[in-house]
Image (cartoon, rainbow, N blue to C red; front, side, top):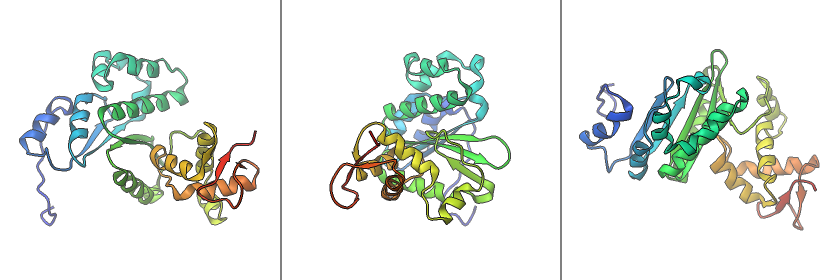
Length: 258
């Protein structure tokens, strides 16, 4: 660590109460901050902390959730959750979700919405899936599209490294291990990408470039450039209808078949 161009200082404390005083004491305000909050045990960082970091220029946060967190309903302190999510009305619908495979999705979406309300213009959610062990869930908040793209670039580099991969929590269709490589080798769009594009078009007709913007801001790894590839393939398979005349381009209006 002596060769790193940074000063490293280890401090012990509670993230919920000590984060803001520590950042103040270190003179961090006014400089970019990356706050990583490991919530494997309990999500207890108040939304006020996220708001303060969101107001700081070029700052970002990552909050992690362990898989057991979503099922420990009896251990969730309502008063603590009020501070984390900004009020009881914001998190009780997630707590009411009883379907095991949907519960974690609803909680992640609820926390993502909390980051949005705290001031982070863009939020992403990820499910990290190791080949062995339990998955880990992340929610990322940033104020810039540049930060959004940088996070996605980083996740692309992580994917399939050391036996780990990740998927977008919006998808329900499971992809067997190794199938992604087979699709790519055949020059076909990823099944996750196709499912997500179909989800966007289920909201109504849209330009290809609009679908691309949605992929950037709403999905864990897909970029605007992937929209045209996916829609071209879906059109060939009869899954997408071209509403505008001429060649399929990013300006074309498309929809799901009537």
